[in-house]
Length: 183
Image (cartoon, rainbow, N blue to C red; front, side):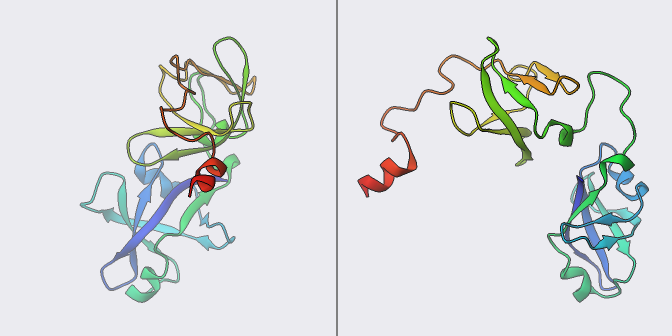
């Protein structure tokens, strides 16, 4: 399943909702048919406009939702589509972020650093969360400079991390256990 958007609130009094779309073209979120949430419920969206909050926030009606209270109860629901319902990607340089989950991560010398467990975006850009390697869990900004190699077919991502990337700042404890021992 690929996360396509999230309901971020109610709009008006007739059950319309504000949907933040994660699709490349925001309105495309309504072209995949009914979307589902993590609980397996389905939501059939009909777009009715754009919100003033941003270009990726849309106003939609959802079948069966007829008043503001019902719309407000959906705030925070994430909307997913099955990966096989998304368009095929034509170029080698293009991929869905969901395709990165599970790929092996290596540094510029080929040393294994772990696997990608999630791709997050906190507003400043995409971030790869990597776990299972000798350096432990870490995050890296998903930029061409830090992540110059993405080979989905080979299930591998290559990082070019700056010197000292894994060095602890002076005075920082080695682990959470060390911190609790101090307290």
